[in-house]
Image (cartoon, rainbow, N blue to C red; front, side, top):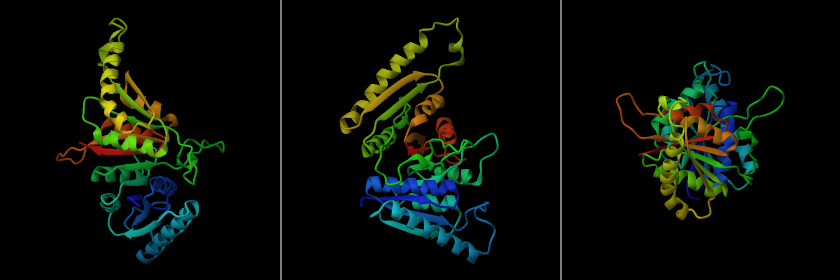
Length: 300
C-alpha cells in the first residue's frame, strides 16, 4: 500500500458514484480506500431531518453497506470508514490532507443556483491543496439511456480506459498539474491529451483583420507547449501523448476534448487573498459542465 484514496459519502447517487470511482482508482493505484461521512452534512431529500441518534445510525449503515458493496466489486481492496463530526467542507478537507486524493459527488449546475452538494464541493476544493476529483452519477436521457458518467466505467477496475485530458496554461508553471495528469495516464495505460487554448482579443474575430493571426498564435503556442511537455515525455516514456494548441475559448476546447474522456484534469492556482481561495474560470466551467470525472489540482 502506498497511500489512501478518500471518498465522501452523503447517501446521494452522486456520492455513491464517487465512492465506486474512488474504489476503482484505489484498486488501480494499489492504495487503500477510506470512506467518510460528516455528521453535519446539510439536510437533503436523502438525509431527512431526524434525531442525532437516528442520523448516526443512518450514517453507519450507509458506510457499512457501501464498503460491503465495494469489497465485492474489488476483492482484496483495503477499505476503512469514518463518521466525522463537523461541517462537511472542513471535515473533508482535513481528510484530504492525509490522502493522495479526495473524491466527492457533484451535480451539474444550470441556471438555477447549485445544490447543497455542489456548494460543499466548491467549499472543499477551496479549503484543500490536495487533488479533488468530482464525480457525477450516470445521467439519464429520459429514454432509458445513459450518458458518459461514472457508472459507465467497469466496476472491477480492469479497463479499458479512455483518455485522460488535461488543460494547461503554457504561460505559467504547471509542474504539479502535469505530474498528476501523466501519472494518471501511466496508471491507466491510456493516452494523455494535453490541450492549450489561447483566447484572442475580441477584435481578432472580425473578418477584416488578417485571417492568419490565429494560425500564427497557434503555431507559436504549439512550439512552447512541445517544449513544456518534453521533460514529461522523457519521464513517462510509456504514455502516449497527444498535444493540441489552438486559438479560441479555453474552457470550450477543454470540454470538447473531454467529451469521451475517462478523466479531465484542470488546475487551480494556489493564491492567498482576503476573500479566500481562487478557482479560475476555466476550472469553474469544466467542473460544472463536464460529464466525465474532473480532477482539480491545486498548484503554484
